[in-house]
Each structure stands twice: as C-alpha cells, then as structure tokens.
Length: 488
Image 1 (cartoon, rainbow, N blue to C red):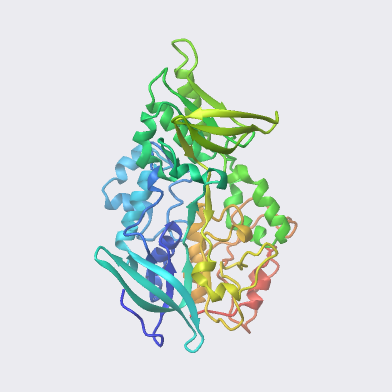
Image 2: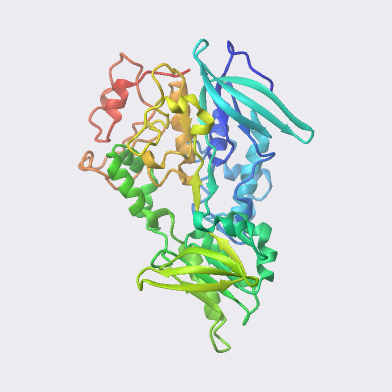
C-alpha cells in the first residue's frame, strides 16, 4: 500500500480484517468507492485455536459475508462452493450449519480475491487533518526484514479490530507459572497435545467454547482415565435460546428497537439476555451427555465432574500441581481442587478504540458509563469539527445489543454503512425483518408486505415519500427528515 496524498484521499479506510470488515470490503467492491483495508496479521485468521474437528457454526450458511444483503454477490458461500467444485457434495450433505473450519476456509477465499486488502500492515494511530478534512492514518508495514512507515489518508473510517481473549485478573499469573499448561480456550488447538498428556484437566467456563473444549477432551482421553472437571460460575450448563421467535432478537428490527431504548434499559437487557448468546448449543450439550452415557455402559461412571454454580477466585502451583480456590455460590462453601492443566474458556472483551483514535476519542462525547456513542448507522459521535465519519463494527453492543457480534448481521451492517456513505440505494434493505413487534410503536401495523427499504432516505430538503410515512417503525421518518445525504 503506497502513501496517499491528502488532496486525493481514499473514500474509506478499514482498520482490522475480521469477518465484519471483510464483509464490508466484499460488498464495497462493486460500489466504486476508493477503499483499502489494513490488518496487522500476515493473513486472514478466524479463531484458529478453536477450529475443532466437527465443531459447527451456530448460524446457518446463509449468514455468510454477503448473502443477506446481496444474494447475487460473487462472494457468497454458495459461489465459494461452486468455485471449489463442492456444490453438489454440499447439496447432498443437506447441511444448514457449516463446520467452523469451512467458514474459515470460505473467508480466506474471499480475502484472497477481494482487492484492497493489506495484511501485515499495522495502524499505529489516527488523527483528523482539519485542513484537508481527512483522516490521517499512521501505517507500519510489517515484513520479515523489518518495518516501514508511511501515512495514508481517507475521508471515512471503518474500525473492526475485534475482541481479545479475557482472563480474569486473579488467574492471570497462572499462565506464566508452573509446570503444566494454563491457557485461554482461544489457544486450545495449539496446546491440545499437552492437555491430553496431563493427568487431570480442568475447564472453566460454560459458554460454547468451554463446552466444545470439554467435549473434545472427553472424546480423546482414554476411558477410565478421563480426569476432567468442568466448572462454571453459572447455575447450570444452560442451552442456547434457539427458538425461531427467540432468534428474532438477531434481526435488524430488534437492533433498531434496542438502539432507541434508554441507556440504563439497554445495559440491563444485555446482562439479562445472556442465554441468547453466551449459552451452549443444544447439539453440543446432547453430544456431551451421549459421550458420558456411553462410558457408563460397561459399569461405573466416567471420571468427569460437571460442576456449575462455582467461581474460581484464585490458584497456586504447589508440589507440581495447580490448586484452584473454589467458592460454591448457593452453598456458600469454599473448597480447593487439585489439577494438572487449566483451560480458561472465560470469553472475550472488545478491544478499546481510545488508543487507536487518540485525540479523536478524547474529544468525543460519552454515555454515563464513559463509552463512545454510536448512532443508528454505526457511526461514532465525534467532535463537531470532524466532518468525516468513523463507523464501528463489533464495538457497539452497548448501543445495538446482543446481535452486535452475530455473523448473521455482518452483511446487513455493511450494507447500512455503504448505503450511508454513498447516499444511494446500492443495497436495498427491508424495513421489516421480524414477526415480533418489539415495542408499542408499530405493534398494530398488522400485515402488508412492507417493501420500504432502510436506505430510502431522501436528500435534505426533499419530502419523505408517502409510502414511508407512518410506517410504525421507530426512527424511520425522523431519520429521513434529518438525513444529510451522501457522505461521499
């Protein structure tokens, strides 16, 4: 990537290339925007430590990078299968949920084909150049022989820097001490052999990753020498809410509704809705039970303990073994567990934007919890003198709800961003996507095919078309009246 002239900037620069920004890049290709994306890793990587054999996505194959915004895109999953001459095998396999490894391979196929993606490029900082009304990005190219530095300019940004593995503070010291492996589940596959060699392994965390790691270890460890504990702070190894109406919480309708709620209500809902996104897939729970049951056929019980309602408050290596401090929440009792290896399936945290944005973040307004504000088009609210937009992809759970990291919404979010940047109708998006009415406004709208599109916002000064008035969907009419038109 060569430096740009501030008088001839990119229309859009993307920071980070995960599924969210890869979706944006794929859908941006036919729009004519001058765009480039930067990623510090040398190639596309999607949770490589958790691409466990037989593990599947929790969303259907239609939740690829483009289909739910543009089924005709050349970058669809079905076209990937056609390109790799696997369309008929997929057809006869009757799969609705693809293996994780296959989704990773599909994304790498897209990353190899979409132009403008620059791997091995780190963005060290961003500042606003008010003289030229552009963002200035400090770029470092990472090579085997060293680093080179240059500056790139763009009118608008799309930041999708993802999440980082989270290890609770009281347990972090354990990852660098002791003779046995202590790791986050994100690194599971790379350390699996060491875990299988350990006499006893403890898995902490009752989300999907913890369940998949426990199941994989259970299947691979010899019968009678299972030597496994699975601990969870939650009161049960709970199944994911996967009913058809429950899944409507992952629609654009619910995202719009959630965005319009008061901040305290949003914060409460994110906590209460954990079973929508932090619980365990039904099939995984069934597979765990089946494997445990199979090991009882010859008599006796497997040496595997599943213990919910327990928090791990600390630990230390003593006498060559790791001793974990446990507290049972309901019994209010303390105990200690000796183990030889520990897998922490303790989730992920959003990477903070402030270090990247610097002075831009310092001047940006915040909510009462100190978080950056994100509008309904995924733009950060910035200081008034910044005319460029910064779109965020994956850092807006506090404003857009539990669907933020869901793969089923990446194409829709990308389409909203591109329609906003171009001010046009490049990607028609439906206003109505759920049978559920998530609020009193629109609850009595009833039937009708409602083909109004979310992009249908007239330029400032033009009247709102008749068919878009009084639709009953929160914010549409107001948004249309306030639209500033295309951003490019």
